[in-house]
Amino acid sequence: MPELSFGATVRYIRQDLNVQIDNGYSVDAGARYLFNFSGTKVFTSAVVQNLFGKVGINKLPQVMRIGAGASYGGIMRVGTLEGEIDYVVEDLSNSLNQKYFNVGVGMN
Image 1: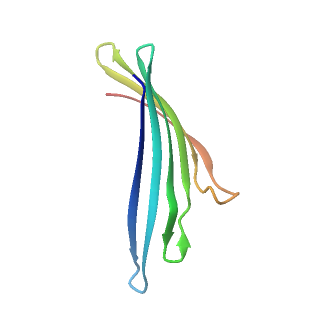
Image 2: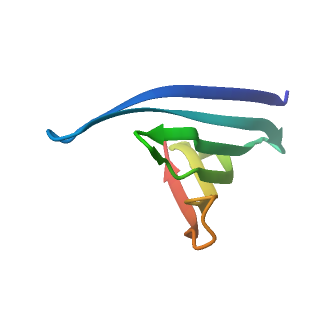
Image 3: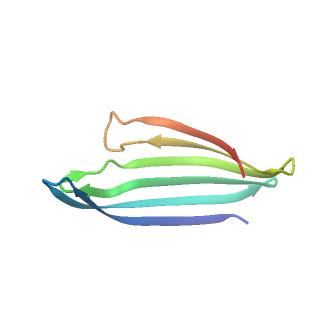
């Protein structure tokens, strides 16, 4: 049965540099879609971090991650093989932002 989930986190940020104290806030929001494909659990997800984020007068960079992964159980009766790939954009508001892929494989 397919499963769609959403989540969000609101953070309060305090920065104390002994000469200046700044307060701020940030919001992270994400979604995940999980489904079975021929006995393999497959998911896609997306998250944006630091929505409306600000500390003092400085805006926090918005980070976006979009990913997909799979979990296949029963590999040689040892455990569950899991793999994932993410595409990351580090600062959505900057045209010189960093873009890269994260890839991971593991076994539970």
